[in-house]
Length: 292
Image (cartoon, rainbow, N blue to C red; front, side):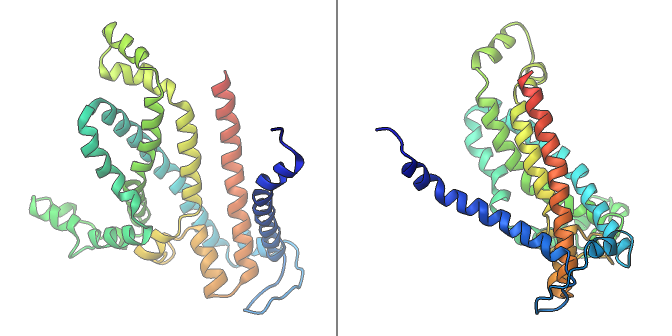
Protein backbone atom coordinates (compact mmCIF):
# COMPACT_ATOMS: atom_id res chain seq x y z
CA UNK A 1 0.00 0.00 0.00
CA UNK A 2 1.62 3.28 -1.06
CA UNK A 3 2.01 6.04 1.47
CA UNK A 4 -0.15 9.10 0.92
CA UNK A 5 0.15 12.67 2.16
CA UNK A 6 -2.49 11.86 4.76
CA UNK A 7 -0.33 9.05 6.16
CA UNK A 8 2.66 11.35 6.37
CA UNK A 9 0.68 14.03 8.19
CA UNK A 10 -0.83 11.43 10.52
CA UNK A 11 2.53 10.10 11.67
CA UNK A 12 4.63 13.25 11.51
CA UNK A 13 1.95 15.72 12.60
CA UNK A 14 2.33 15.21 16.38
CA UNK A 15 6.12 15.38 16.11
CA UNK A 16 5.96 18.56 14.05
CA UNK A 17 3.64 20.13 16.61
CA UNK A 18 6.07 19.31 19.40
CA UNK A 19 8.99 20.74 17.42
CA UNK A 20 7.04 23.90 16.60
CA UNK A 21 6.08 24.25 20.26
CA UNK A 22 9.71 23.88 21.30
CA UNK A 23 10.91 26.54 18.86
CA UNK A 24 8.01 28.76 19.85
CA UNK A 25 9.08 28.55 23.49
CA UNK A 26 12.65 29.37 22.48
CA UNK A 27 11.45 32.44 20.58
CA UNK A 28 9.32 33.44 23.58
CA UNK A 29 12.37 33.21 25.85
CA UNK A 30 14.43 35.35 23.48
CA UNK A 31 11.66 37.95 23.45
CA UNK A 32 11.52 38.00 27.26
CA UNK A 33 15.31 38.35 27.44
CA UNK A 34 14.93 41.67 25.60
CA UNK A 35 12.28 43.03 27.95
CA UNK A 36 12.43 44.81 31.28
CA UNK A 37 10.31 42.16 33.03
CA UNK A 38 10.68 42.35 36.81
CA UNK A 39 8.13 40.80 39.19
CA UNK A 40 5.27 38.37 38.70
CA UNK A 41 3.23 40.43 36.24
CA UNK A 42 4.46 40.50 32.61
CA UNK A 43 6.22 43.71 31.61
CA UNK A 44 6.58 44.10 27.87
CA UNK A 45 8.94 47.04 27.89
CA UNK A 46 11.53 46.45 25.19
CA UNK A 47 15.07 47.21 26.35
CA UNK A 48 17.13 45.52 23.62
CA UNK A 49 20.33 43.88 24.86
CA UNK A 50 20.38 45.70 28.20
CA UNK A 51 19.89 42.46 30.19
CA UNK A 52 22.88 40.92 28.45
CA UNK A 53 24.98 44.03 29.10
CA UNK A 54 24.00 43.87 32.78
CA UNK A 55 25.37 40.32 32.90
CA UNK A 56 28.55 40.86 30.90
CA UNK A 57 29.70 44.36 31.82
CA UNK A 58 27.16 45.58 34.38
CA UNK A 59 26.26 45.04 38.01
CA UNK A 60 26.09 41.23 37.69
CA UNK A 61 29.39 40.86 35.84
CA UNK A 62 31.36 39.19 38.64
CA UNK A 63 28.61 36.70 39.47
CA UNK A 64 27.97 35.88 35.82
CA UNK A 65 31.62 35.16 35.01
CA UNK A 66 31.99 33.06 38.18
CA UNK A 67 29.05 30.95 36.99
CA UNK A 68 30.44 30.78 33.47
CA UNK A 69 33.86 29.71 34.79
CA UNK A 70 32.25 26.95 36.84
CA UNK A 71 30.35 25.67 33.79
CA UNK A 72 33.65 25.53 31.87
CA UNK A 73 35.24 23.62 34.77
CA UNK A 74 32.35 21.15 34.61
CA UNK A 75 32.90 20.72 30.87
CA UNK A 76 36.60 19.97 31.28
CA UNK A 77 36.70 17.98 34.52
CA UNK A 78 33.45 16.01 34.22
CA UNK A 79 33.42 14.78 30.61
CA UNK A 80 36.89 13.26 30.17
CA UNK A 81 36.94 11.09 33.35
CA UNK A 82 33.33 9.99 32.90
CA UNK A 83 33.82 8.93 29.29
CA UNK A 84 37.22 7.32 29.98
CA UNK A 85 36.02 5.34 33.01
CA UNK A 86 32.90 4.31 31.08
CA UNK A 87 35.03 2.93 28.24
CA UNK A 88 37.38 1.06 30.59
CA UNK A 89 34.48 -0.45 32.53
CA UNK A 90 32.73 -1.46 29.31
CA UNK A 91 35.83 -3.27 28.06
CA UNK A 92 36.32 -4.90 31.45
CA UNK A 93 32.73 -6.16 31.43
CA UNK A 94 33.19 -7.48 27.91
CA UNK A 95 36.17 -9.50 29.14
CA UNK A 96 34.46 -10.69 32.34
CA UNK A 97 32.23 -13.27 30.71
CA UNK A 98 29.41 -14.53 32.93
CA UNK A 99 30.52 -12.22 35.76
CA UNK A 100 29.07 -9.35 33.72
CA UNK A 101 25.61 -10.25 35.03
CA UNK A 102 26.82 -9.51 38.55
CA UNK A 103 28.88 -6.38 37.92
CA UNK A 104 26.83 -4.53 35.33
CA UNK A 105 23.88 -3.76 37.68
CA UNK A 106 26.35 -2.45 40.29
CA UNK A 107 27.65 0.17 37.88
CA UNK A 108 24.20 1.01 36.51
CA UNK A 109 22.57 1.45 39.91
CA UNK A 110 23.74 5.08 40.45
CA UNK A 111 22.10 6.06 37.17
CA UNK A 112 18.68 5.10 38.55
CA UNK A 113 18.99 7.66 41.34
CA UNK A 114 17.84 11.25 40.99
CA UNK A 115 20.37 14.03 41.44
CA UNK A 116 18.51 15.00 44.62
CA UNK A 117 19.20 11.61 46.21
CA UNK A 118 22.78 11.58 44.92
CA UNK A 119 23.38 15.08 46.25
CA UNK A 120 21.98 14.22 49.68
CA UNK A 121 24.12 11.10 50.00
CA UNK A 122 27.33 12.75 48.82
CA UNK A 123 26.76 15.86 50.95
CA UNK A 124 26.68 13.57 53.98
CA UNK A 125 29.81 11.75 52.79
CA UNK A 126 31.63 15.09 52.40
CA UNK A 127 30.58 16.34 55.86
CA UNK A 128 33.77 17.50 57.66
CA UNK A 129 32.83 15.91 61.01
CA UNK A 130 30.34 13.08 60.42
CA UNK A 131 31.18 12.30 56.79
CA UNK A 132 32.41 8.84 55.85
CA UNK A 133 35.32 10.23 53.79
CA UNK A 134 37.02 12.15 56.61
CA UNK A 135 36.21 9.45 59.18
CA UNK A 136 37.67 6.83 56.85
CA UNK A 137 40.86 8.86 56.47
CA UNK A 138 41.16 9.20 60.25
CA UNK A 139 40.61 5.46 60.77
CA UNK A 140 43.55 4.57 58.49
CA UNK A 141 45.84 7.19 60.02
CA UNK A 142 45.50 9.76 57.27
CA UNK A 143 43.59 12.32 59.30
CA UNK A 144 45.90 15.09 58.05
CA UNK A 145 44.29 14.64 54.63
CA UNK A 146 40.81 15.33 55.99
CA UNK A 147 39.30 18.38 54.34
CA UNK A 148 36.22 20.58 54.73
CA UNK A 149 35.42 19.46 51.15
CA UNK A 150 32.23 21.24 50.03
CA UNK A 151 32.80 23.96 52.64
CA UNK A 152 36.05 24.89 50.89
CA UNK A 153 35.50 27.28 47.93
CA UNK A 154 38.51 25.81 46.16
CA UNK A 155 37.33 22.19 46.44
CA UNK A 156 33.55 22.44 46.42
CA UNK A 157 33.03 22.46 42.64
CA UNK A 158 35.39 19.50 42.20
CA UNK A 159 33.48 17.63 44.91
CA UNK A 160 30.21 18.20 43.06
CA UNK A 161 31.79 16.96 39.85
CA UNK A 162 33.04 13.84 41.67
CA UNK A 163 29.46 12.99 42.65
CA UNK A 164 28.29 13.51 39.06
CA UNK A 165 31.07 11.29 37.69
CA UNK A 166 29.99 8.53 40.08
CA UNK A 167 26.42 8.78 38.83
CA UNK A 168 27.03 9.00 35.08
CA UNK A 169 29.94 6.62 34.57
CA UNK A 170 27.43 3.75 34.25
CA UNK A 171 25.62 5.71 31.54
CA UNK A 172 28.80 6.06 29.49
CA UNK A 173 29.66 2.41 30.18
CA UNK A 174 26.33 1.23 28.75
CA UNK A 175 26.78 3.12 25.48
CA UNK A 176 30.38 1.97 25.10
CA UNK A 177 29.46 -1.64 25.88
CA UNK A 178 26.90 -1.61 23.07
CA UNK A 179 29.56 -0.20 20.72
CA UNK A 180 32.11 -2.84 21.74
CA UNK A 181 29.58 -5.62 21.19
CA UNK A 182 29.06 -4.21 17.69
CA UNK A 183 32.73 -4.85 16.82
CA UNK A 184 33.02 -8.14 14.89
CA UNK A 185 34.28 -10.86 17.23
CA UNK A 186 36.47 -12.15 14.42
CA UNK A 187 38.47 -8.90 14.44
CA UNK A 188 39.24 -9.13 18.16
CA UNK A 189 39.98 -12.85 18.05
CA UNK A 190 42.30 -12.40 15.06
CA UNK A 191 44.27 -9.80 17.01
CA UNK A 192 44.63 -12.19 19.95
CA UNK A 193 45.69 -15.03 17.65
CA UNK A 194 48.42 -12.73 16.31
CA UNK A 195 49.70 -12.35 19.87
CA UNK A 196 48.04 -9.12 20.95
CA UNK A 197 47.40 -8.74 24.68
CA UNK A 198 44.12 -7.46 26.09
CA UNK A 199 45.71 -4.03 26.50
CA UNK A 200 46.85 -4.02 22.87
CA UNK A 201 43.40 -5.17 21.69
CA UNK A 202 41.89 -2.30 23.65
CA UNK A 203 44.30 0.26 22.20
CA UNK A 204 44.43 -0.86 18.57
CA UNK A 205 41.02 -2.51 18.03
CA UNK A 206 38.47 -1.25 20.54
CA UNK A 207 39.36 2.45 20.76
CA UNK A 208 39.45 3.06 16.97
CA UNK A 209 36.09 1.28 16.53
CA UNK A 210 34.04 3.06 19.18
CA UNK A 211 34.42 6.58 17.78
CA UNK A 212 30.70 6.83 17.05
CA UNK A 213 29.92 5.97 20.68
CA UNK A 214 32.44 8.56 21.86
CA UNK A 215 30.66 11.18 19.78
CA UNK A 216 27.30 10.33 21.36
CA UNK A 217 28.66 10.06 24.91
CA UNK A 218 30.55 13.34 24.69
CA UNK A 219 27.62 15.26 23.19
CA UNK A 220 25.21 14.00 25.85
CA UNK A 221 27.64 14.68 28.70
CA UNK A 222 28.15 18.22 27.38
CA UNK A 223 24.41 18.82 27.53
CA UNK A 224 24.29 17.39 31.06
CA UNK A 225 26.99 19.79 32.25
CA UNK A 226 25.27 22.79 30.68
CA UNK A 227 22.02 22.09 32.53
CA UNK A 228 23.36 20.81 35.86
CA UNK A 229 21.24 22.22 38.67
CA UNK A 230 20.06 19.61 41.18
CA UNK A 231 23.46 18.73 42.64
CA UNK A 232 24.34 22.38 43.20
CA UNK A 233 20.96 23.10 44.78
CA UNK A 234 21.05 20.12 47.15
CA UNK A 235 24.72 19.95 48.10
CA UNK A 236 25.87 23.59 48.37
CA UNK A 237 23.06 25.93 47.24
CA UNK A 238 25.74 27.69 45.24
CA UNK A 239 28.03 28.21 48.22
CA UNK A 240 30.32 28.86 49.87
CA UNK A 241 29.31 32.33 48.72
CA UNK A 242 28.77 31.89 44.98
CA UNK A 243 31.79 29.66 44.42
CA UNK A 244 29.81 26.65 43.09
CA UNK A 245 27.04 28.45 41.24
CA UNK A 246 26.50 27.50 37.60
CA UNK A 247 24.43 29.26 34.95
CA UNK A 248 21.26 27.13 35.34
CA UNK A 249 21.31 27.75 39.10
CA UNK A 250 21.80 31.49 38.53
CA UNK A 251 18.95 31.48 36.02
CA UNK A 252 16.57 29.82 38.50
CA UNK A 253 17.48 32.16 41.36
CA UNK A 254 17.25 35.29 39.19
CA UNK A 255 13.90 34.25 37.70
CA UNK A 256 11.99 32.64 40.57
CA UNK A 257 13.68 33.87 43.74
CA UNK A 258 14.58 37.45 42.79
CA UNK A 259 11.91 37.72 40.05
CA UNK A 260 14.24 39.33 37.52
CA UNK A 261 12.52 37.44 34.72
CA UNK A 262 14.25 39.33 31.91
CA UNK A 263 17.67 38.61 33.40
CA UNK A 264 16.79 34.94 33.89
CA UNK A 265 15.66 34.67 30.26
CA UNK A 266 18.91 36.28 29.13
CA UNK A 267 20.89 33.68 31.06
CA UNK A 268 18.86 30.88 29.48
CA UNK A 269 19.59 32.30 26.02
CA UNK A 270 23.30 32.33 26.84
CA UNK A 271 23.07 28.67 27.95
CA UNK A 272 21.38 27.85 24.62
CA UNK A 273 24.11 29.64 22.68
CA UNK A 274 26.78 27.74 24.62
CA UNK A 275 25.07 24.41 23.89
CA UNK A 276 24.85 25.17 20.18
CA UNK A 277 28.40 26.55 20.06
CA UNK A 278 29.84 23.43 21.69
CA UNK A 279 27.67 20.58 20.40
CA UNK A 280 27.16 21.57 16.74
CA UNK A 281 30.87 22.03 15.81
CA UNK A 282 31.79 18.91 17.76
CA UNK A 283 29.08 16.85 16.03
CA UNK A 284 30.14 18.20 12.62
CA UNK A 285 33.80 17.39 13.30
CA UNK A 286 32.94 13.92 14.60
CA UNK A 287 30.74 13.07 11.62
CA UNK A 288 33.46 14.23 9.22
CA UNK A 289 36.00 12.12 11.09
CA UNK A 290 33.81 9.01 10.97
CA UNK A 291 33.28 9.42 7.23
CA UNK A 292 37.01 9.51 6.50
